[in-house]
Length: 542
Image 1 (tube, rainbow, N blue to C red):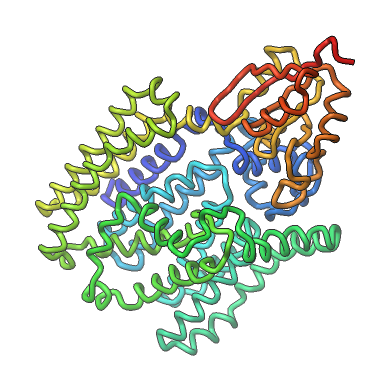
Image 2 (image 1 turned 180 degrees about the horizontal axis):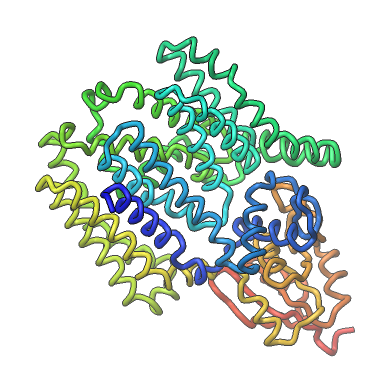
């Protein structure tokens, strides 16, 4: 077996290991992960191939491709957390492997290809997104594959690659948004213009890739437009596209420094390698660096003015960053002063890791007492390894330094998996089915806040009534009963002797205030901000 095959096998096994590890342990979290799981489950059970569903009713927040993948996984492996997490994990693996092949073909350098795939595999944001049931990793990988295919066509003039561009552009458009094709097209036109290839622009658009794209991507959009008309248009284009541009869904992230901060933190532990970038690095790889710069800059420019900012929106930027950093690690670009600064920064970074213990102790004090010994082991291991990586880099042992950092990320997720599962348990309703069984609460109403409604429905199959001070608490309207005013709450609760409630502290206080002396709100489970209780009528109350 040659070195290339060995490298590829190691990359595949390592990425599978780190992305799938804990998939059967860590629960699906509310409200985002279960949003997609609910849709896939409903589509599978209702045999609704073309129409995405939420609570059994049409919902057009996203196109269906990611739901199709989840439904397929549910069909073969059962409707559970492992099946759901398998889809983003495999998407992440495909992106890592594609990056290896692309880098090796373009630069004809095995070491750079391996390093680029390892950097992408273990960069913090890409790793986390590959373990979360969200569309973003599949969307990002589809975009990456389409742009990889374009550049291979540009560099080697092999027309077959443009068919791959059309195919993966269609996948991106069916996964999340037509922006998955529009932004890459702007990047491509800009690149061809800046690189002085006007004939290539004509060749690109004369190729029949666009026909393949239309055959694959257009039918679903035509179907839902014809069948649902205004309902689809308002939800998908107005609220989920235009609305996110003008209004912030997460106010704290709507700042000018949000995306730069995400790039710095999300590229850890490789962020310090950006110091290796320089004039010679650019001069030796002028065409590729121009393409990567326009690739990254195009997505940042597109999403920067959007008021509803999320870290995952700029995930497509990660592949060109990973390849750029891998190129910069070549010995010819290493200078003593850069090596000293980078090595020192890794040592300081390792020392700063110990502060994580204090942060977790402050934010999750109840969990800290339970798992503090594992936390010390995990953080200590991470800190010592980063320090070791810094010293190795100072001694010019770059490959060994990279290997040590990759290894520690693999080991770290084994060490802290129980802690992650417990933390995420505060944001999951995976225990509701067990609570219903324990209290023999079958066929009775369930009241939940908007953050707990989808998870409760996913795990139990029970339709819920949403309790909220806002008469329309969801970003996009959902076909689910909502009680918001005191009058509505009194009327609904008055119909039942007992009601299971999955709420937060704020709604718990409101129920106590509304039903003081009339109902007994008995807490049966409490985990952080999440409260599970049974509200019972007091017998003396008529």
